[in-house]
Image (cartoon, rainbow, N blue to C red; front, side, top):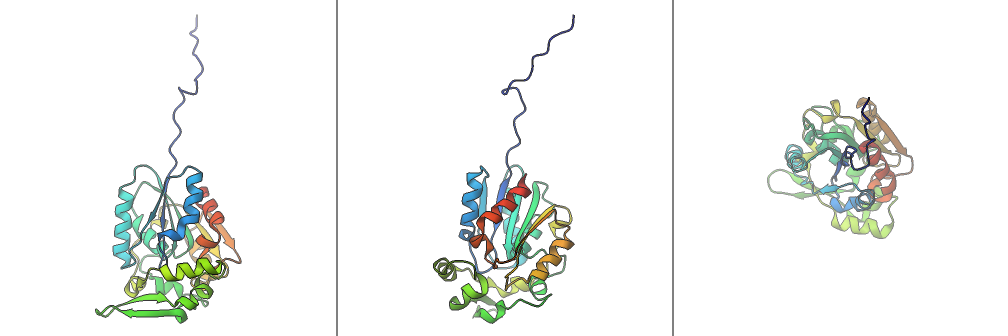
Amino acid sequence: MSAVVPSATADQRPPKSPKPTIVLVHGAFAESASWNGVVERLKRKGYPVVAVANPLRSLSGDAAYVRKVLGTINGPVVIAGHSYGGMVLSNAATGNPNVKGLVYIASFAPESGESTFDLANKYPGNVLGEALDKIDLGDGDHDLVIQQDKFRSYFAADVDRETAELAAATQRPVREAALAEASGEPAWHDVPSWFLLTGKDRTIPLQAQKFMAERAKARGVVELPRASHAVAVSEPGAVTDLIIRAAR
């Protein structure tokens, strides 16, 4: 007589894998609150979120800091970066087995040896330099900031004026040497990537964004033809949707 095996109940089924932690890395001339609209949406979907305060001092140093943040997180991670934040995540995630996906939001995705300046000027269309002021740091280097009266038109043209003015006043300067520093071996060689491209970007020309997405053999690419560089602020829903695609 054969034994009767009871069917599995809900309590007996294996627990679902936890949702990955989403780590967000802002770029130059921004700060972690620039992700607020994305953070709110991700948390409503049940994702744990860490919006890192990117130091913006040197590429290697910034990546080392983000690498330490990643080391505090248990379980799988999807990391998203905006602009220079893509340079940082590309280096910070290298060799970390917990990182399951990379999401580049109007972002740089370097090859080894490339700098932010290299990629920003690879194709015509980067005009942000016209709007920058330099702060002499006294050591031969400079901090770069966007002139507040030019911030919206050059960086955040599709963001409402009041929000853009707040962002201009609270922007974080980036050390010029950080933008000139060459990348190490990037994580996108080994980790799947997704890209969101911005058609009205005056900081990273669309052609450059497409080049980097194609080179990385991106799993998914979303193009927003009318979006400015500050797309995480102007289009948080689209940014969130792409991050969730990468996290599934």
